Image 1 (cartoon, rainbow, N blue to C red):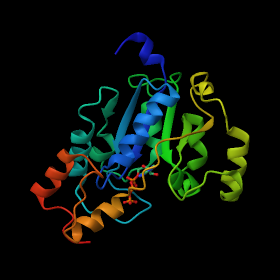
Image 2: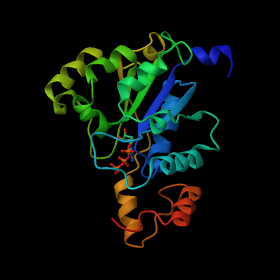
Image 3: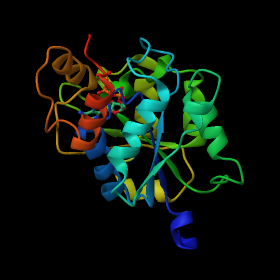
Length: 224
Ligand code: ATP
């Protein structure tokens, strides 16, 4: 990667990816284009704390993401949360990315979240520190409006204070702002895909064929 692109914003995209699907891929692609990101770093969660245990082992969810993003030169894979022994929390992950041997203190980092994940932000571990470390960019997701009035009180006031309508502002500082971006609305969820697979229905065209083959070869998601 060139010197110039190492100072451009880096997207940071975490998730359970159980399994990864076209909603995730489209979110990352739309973010890279509309926010001017040099790259998007995908960070699958090892042991997510705020939800039920994943249905598939961490290393295999990592492998599914590897297959899904392989053809996209703007996408990078980060296995640090999968390899860590501790539960996965975003603030320590961002603190690691801020180390000099990673991105350092100055490079803009943009944490990418869907609108549903954003509305639950106040339940995240040390959530108040997120904007000290990165910007947050929220992707619209079907059925989840992003409006200050519909957010929980502490998040609503933060949203009003930190919102920037012009996403070019994300390149002007290492973090601290909240932006929204639009993406082609895809009403796809991993929950729905797991349900389809558990009932023997096809999940084709909801996720990449290479990921479907991997799922079939390993007999994943046969039970709900
Ligand atoms: P599940 O159905 O198991 O809860 P999911 O499909 O929501 O999973 P996650 O791995 O939990 O997938 O999501 C990772 C991130 O991707 C979250 O920020 C989530 O909001 C976002 N996301 C997932 N699917 C979509 C979609 N179809 N459109 C926009 N954002 C999405």
